Image (cartoon, rainbow, N blue to C red; front, side):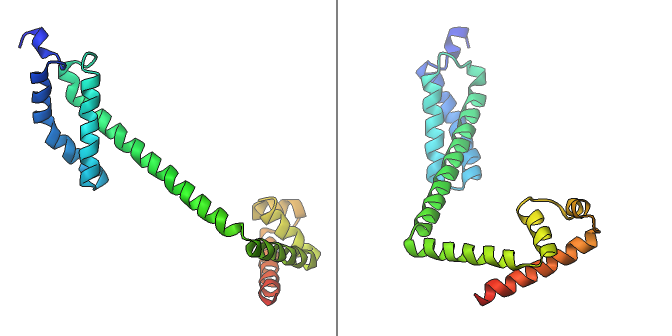
Amino acid sequence: MPEENKSVCKQSNFEILFDTHARTLHSFVYYKCGDKQQAEDIVQEAFIKLWDNCAKVIYEKAKSFLYTVANNKFLNEVAHQKVVLKYQLDSTNKTNKETPEYLLEEKEFMDKLQQAIADLPSRQREVFLLSRMEKKTYKEIAEIVGISVKAVEKRMHKALEILRERIGKI
């Protein structure tokens, strides 16, 4: 083919590219997404983008261009779907939590929890708060308090036992 005939913008060359690559590109996308309609849409959009950019794409690189566009389109759709799902989950959680009953129950629970923590013996309360509030490891707590890691484990276990018992009763 002479150089001017290798243009992607020439309709006959574009049709050859479509006939040559459309089916395998569809399979490539279908294997990624598992949705026939989505695969067809992505393939169509890849060829539209190729046509829109035909002056910039070298004929020999058209296949690579198509696969890159299709893959990026698929990844963008997946990312978009994640955002949509996250928003749906967030709005579902917010609407459930914003009911007056829920807010009241949450406040009552937090009050009970704070009281139960305050009622813990000082040694257990200290270990519990360092672990859960300060996010210290048992080893760090042992160094701070000046006891063994085993003693930290024992105090933490006892604190959790007491809290379960207190919160369970209430």
